[in-house]
Length: 396
Image (cartoon, rainbow, N blue to C red):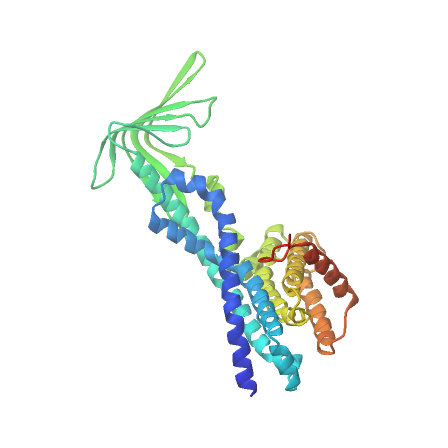
């Protein structure tokens, strides 16, 4: 009987979980992709690269979508069972909240492990892959923009003209460059040969010029400098690549858990950079723990719905979910200057909501009321009472 019951409860939870996950991921994806539209259009990203870009964004989206979908999946599952009088039938058979809890715990463990896998493994890999994709697209844009006997303005404030281009070696002959990045000191560069250098490991693009001269005109003076070799570093364009230093630096999101531990061990725990990376380290572990706690919390919230009533578990769950992330964000900011160790401050939200979950579970099992929750419930019921029910029309 228990195995059959647990299998039924878990399978009934999967449908609302995947539906909620699809909806939440879509909403989060639209919010993330809108700021990138200018980048996508300017770089002319084709369909395969657009799919790659979306795939690299998914781990960051799932980090927030999975915990919320997991909680909603439990709430919607047991709310549906309550509306269909299945919970009453289970209670009549002697199956209370604690008998149903192992199925929810198993589901919460699965979603928490999935969240942990995304946070500790896929997010660093996806962030690094996305940065490399931006680097590749920036290089391709420059390559396509450099045509023989044509002026190219694919680089900001830099105009390039090449006389000939060798298709095999991709080297240029007869290079003319107008460099206006410093408006007070514009440069004109002429070189016999040149080519593009792409340093993928260091995320750096540069124009290598050979045998030429640099001409600078400043008011009534002109200056000419001859060179055998001259290199122009190209500022990369793209999200997170606004300047050369940002493009080459390794962000916290790109580092694995082991890399963060190695960095902190080598630089000490007191430096600002180490604290920032420790916050990222613990955040990746706190969020899966929060997913587990919020999923368990969904069960007593759903059981407060009575047959024939509107679902109160969903709005109440959303309020609790928002409160959790507000507290987590506050604690994250506090950890940057807190005298307490990061490992303690970052786990405060999970400790608070873990105790709250145990407290609510106890009262839900005794079918008692909690004054604070009842206060929120009265507000939700009032809001629902003033909203028209869908599908019903007033009699004229």
